[in-house]
Image 1 (cartoon, rainbow, N blue to C red):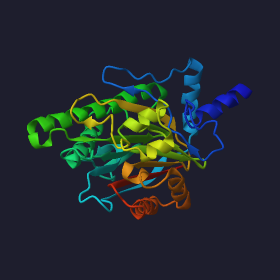
Image 2: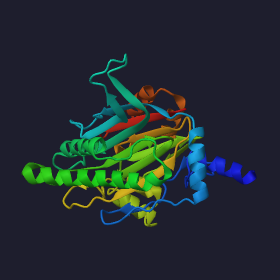
Image 3: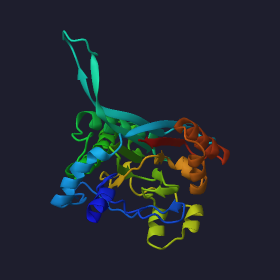
Image 4: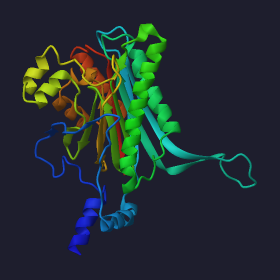
Amino acid sequence: MAAGLTLLGRLLFGHVKRSSPYPRKKSQLQKPRKTNLLKASQSHKVFTMSNSETAAYKLLTAARPPFSIQSFGLSDCGQVRSSNEDCFLIAELARTLRVHHTNLPQQESSFSCHRGHVFMVADGVGGCHAGEVASSLSVNTVEDFLLNTLKRFANLQASDEQAALKDLQKALFQADSRIFEESASHPEWRGMATTLTMAFAVNWRLFLAHAGDSRCYVLSGGLLEQITQDHTMTADMVREGLLSPQQQKKHPWRHMVTNILGGTQPGVRAELHALDLLPDDVILLCSDGLTEMVSDEQILALLQAETDPETVCQRLVDEANKQGGRDNISVIVAHCKA
């Protein structure tokens, strides 16, 4: 009986434990987790489950409360830039049944109860030509991929997760290729590049594909964790022990992005994550226009002070502008609801 209860606790909100923050630390801020960057030639190994765990997962999936999300997004030019090179997207994927002819009294369109929630933030790389073109191309390409190519987006099972992550990886590769295709046709756009952070939330699981220095955070149980890593020269130096986090904040190279979509060479590396979500968790996606101006401590305080996503987005943008607004600012706030 005790073993069964342990299995229930482990599987109720996700069949794999998050590497962090479970068990949670006492500190309120978490460092970004270590991860692998995957190129097109590499595969992503997720996890395996025993037969007993698979059976228990199927049995207990029905015990999860219904999953829904309340979200809002906002993008602002900031106080210095003359144009906005950021793009963001909030979308929902659901199966649709359209009735053309029937003698039954029913709605013309019906939607499935299983929904996939998509969030994207792309930041056109400053200093490159047509950063706003690159960011919009990346979002549009991934949107098209999710709509027409993604095979798994609702009611995912344990055996589907590895394939789902590979699909998101393919979406980033396609966006990267699309940018180079457009650059070849428009010489004035050559070298254009963008970051891209994409989150896909479904059935109490969060899947992430990421490249660049935009970020995804999760606020859970009072703890704010940066899930993605910054793909910059100075962030790499901090991870290698060559710089301290304090030195990085003032370093002249801190804006040099080392992994992007587009640029001068194809071959974006996709950082991938799959983790559990809990009721009342908050997902934050943002460009570096927010994080360069507003500290993690301030972000945490603002996320905890207000439950309405639209109000939180506005307050985050206002705070970044108050601190100088040196770059475009884009934020998406999503509250997980049971």
